[in-house]
Image (tube, rainbow, N blue to C red; front, side, top):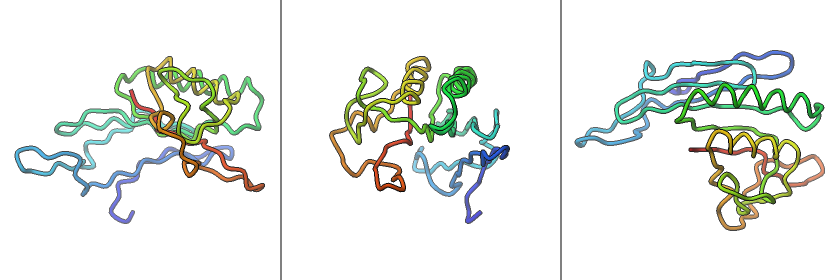
Length: 173
C-alpha cells in the first residue's frame, strides 16, 4: 500500500494483529556509492499471531530480526499477562539480533538497570512494566528512549481523562 511492503499477522478475538511496513525505496546503507534498499524477497515472516509478528530481514549489509508486538492491556488478570510475556520471550529468544517494536502497555522508569533508565517520560513501573522489564533483561535488550534526559513530550498515549503515558517502546540488543 502506498509503496510500502506491509507484512501483517492475523486478527482474532478482538486482537487486531500486528504489522511491519517496509519502504523498499528508502536506503538503509550505501556500499561503493550504491544505495542499498530492502527488496520484498529479503523479508520472511517467521512467526505470526494476533499479538506478535516476527520478520527476518536478510539483505546486503543487513541481517536482523524485527518483531512487532502488542502486549495485553492492563485489564486482563496478571496470569494472562505472565503467560503472554513468557511465550513471547520464548519465541524472541530464538533470535539473537532482535529489534522489538512493542505496544507494551507498560510503564517504566522507576526501576533502572541495563535495560531501563530513568529518563524520557519516566513513570512508576507497573505490573506489566515489571513483566516487560524482566523480558528485556532475559533477552538482553534495552529501551534506549528510557535513558535520555527528562522529556515531557515523550509520552505515547493520552487517556480519556487527559493523563499522559509512555506505553510504547523500541527495544534493541
